[in-house]
Structures are given as C-alpha cells and as structure tokens.
Image (cartoon, rainbow, N blue to C red):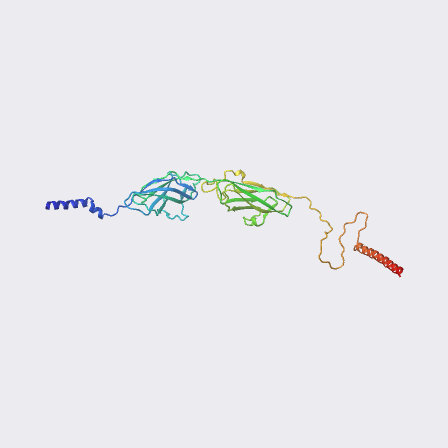
Length: 372
C-alpha cells in the first residue's frame, strides 16, 4: 500500500515536471504567433502607396486585438530608392521607425481583432515622398514584417507598381484683335486638356506683341511686372477633354506691331526631365504655343462735319443765336449776321392774312347793306 502511494506520489511529481495537467493549469498563457499568408502588389499614385490586402493568420492560442506591421522599402544594392516614407502627413496608425537608417522603415499598429487560429485582412494606406531619383530609379519592393521587427515573420512584395501621369495641354488664341493706336482690345486665350490625365493647375506665359502692353484686372493679378510679359499659375481643375479660357486686355501703343505669344506648361514647377510619377509631363509640346497678333488700323479717321446735328430741346430761352454755316461755294459771298429768312416769312404771312381779312370784312358789309 505504501509502495503504491509512493509510486503515485512519484508519478504525480513526474507528471508535474513533465508539464502534465497540473502544470498546464498554472502555466502562463502562450504568446500569439502571427504569420503573413499573402499580400497584394503595392500601387503608388504619386504620394499615396496602397497595399489593398495583407492577410494575417493568428497561429497562437490567444486572441490579439492589435497587429503590428513594419514596412521597409527595399532597392537593389547601391541604388537610391525613388521614394521614401513621408513625414509630411498624419500617418496614424503609422510612424517612422527610429533610427530610419540604413533602411527606411515605417511601423504601424492596426487595431484589428484576430481570434486564435483565425485570419484577418489589413489594408495599408501609406504616404511617400519622391527622392532625387524618382524619375529614373527602378521601383522598390516592400518588405513587411508582422509582430516583433527583429524576430517576426516577414514577406517581400513584388516591385511597387508606380503609376505614370501625363496630360497633353494645347493653347489657342480666339479671334484676331483689331484696333487703333490708343485703343484697348480684348484677347481671349483657351487652354484645352487632351488627356489622358486631369490636372489641378498649369502654367501660362503671355508675351504681348511689340507695340502693345497688357492692362486691366486680369493682368494685374498675374505677375504684372513688366507689362509686356506675364507668367501665371492657373489653379484650375481641368479634366481630360475640357477647356478653360480667360479674356485679357491689350493696349495698342504703336503702329509697329510684331507678333507675341501665349505658352501653356502642364507642369509649371517641374525640372527636366519631368517626373512622370509626381509631375505631369506633356507628351505633345508642339501645341503648347500659340501666336498672338494684333491688327492695327492705320486708315484715316472719318472727318467730323462742321454742321452740328439738331437735337430736340425741352426748353429754349433767349434770342435766336447764329448757327454755323457751311463754307460758301466758289464765287459766292459768305453769309454773315443772323438768318433773316424766318422773319421774312413771318412778315409775308402777316400781310396775306391781313388782305384776306379785309376782303371778308368788306364782303360782309356789302351783304348787310343789300339786305337793308
């Protein structure tokens, strides 16, 4: 009996030492173990880098409520990556790791509940900035590590799909401005986006023809010094297939006029070559310039007649005044003094009226005398 008890005791101790039921009941919880099952190809649209789906599996025995991911941009040895993680935006739930060298990294904590043995999908929306090699360097890959950055499971994605942009902008001058020296004429310029992409702004350069100068409100709001050349930034949402126009004013200062020009630039702040990932190259620059010509009318101005036009008047005061008369024809004498014709007509009329009255009176008297 004792032997059995002793054996039981030994057996219990042995089971406890071996991690039997008694040990399992008092052991600390086993930490969750996360793995990455799959990841979609990263896509970069200018400053936005998106990974639509990162599938995580919880291989541990406990649930997790937060998934920690580290993102690293990986390029070939000796190659400067075209992009880097941005620090200009609110990257919640992400923040750049410290230190960020030699490989820039971004640490993100996603509030995602993953039950033990279950899977969850995470969508990552990250921000990047261009480097000096953005236009020419090959696209990097993204290394993703889950859990501890040093010991966690990791995968490396295919190269980032960097989306290129371009817009074919064309400019034209509508109509032919015509005027005389001293006149101000309208100039309407039109910018058309032939696509394929839209633009939120473009540069416009306007050179006035020699013998003219820009004037008016439109020019005053666009780099008004000097008055001959203006360079402006038009902040306009211009989708593919749409046009934008403005009407400016030119003052003609001379009869000697040479053509000016209107130039449109799709990416006004870009260098050369234009970065197709963060800038907006124009694939057809042959239609970026339009000539601007002004037709100056040098014909003699119509002569002004010396005889003033008669206009109606609501009230006349004072005696009749002398009016201007045409220049007398050759061989005739000039007329001077006031015009007597109205007065002569009035006198003749008075004499005629008096004669008629006299005849009537005498006839009336004759009729009355006969009746008596």
